[in-house]
Image: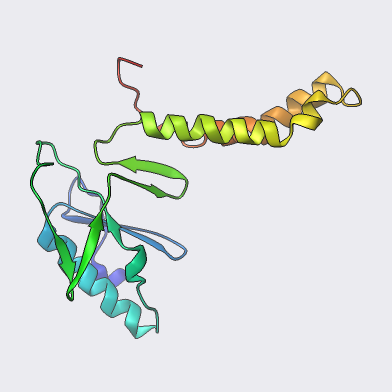
Length: 157
């Protein structure tokens, strides 16, 4: 990763690489920078016997201007990379329009799922109200509010 020259953040550089376990996200400002960074990443991965799964490669295009009608194809070694409207990375939904509504819907659904998975515990007469509150704070609430400290809510919400 050091050879990819990725110090700093995307506001000051042309590229940023986010890595967690076997998930890699390339954030670039231009199509050419994306292609070059991908090639360097591929070369470095091959040195260690790692391969990139082309079936899992996707990209989300963000823009300050409305360029959605224009088709931009990204291709590496003859393989086209699929453009998607949103992608889930480490439990967080990143959308094409940088909208938070989709993420909030996902968090509410996950919170509901966590609550109803433990519904028998919360309805039990054998467990005190104080214990149920502790269990709720430990099991349900963290699932629902995961990542919420980074949300920027629009005025219309």
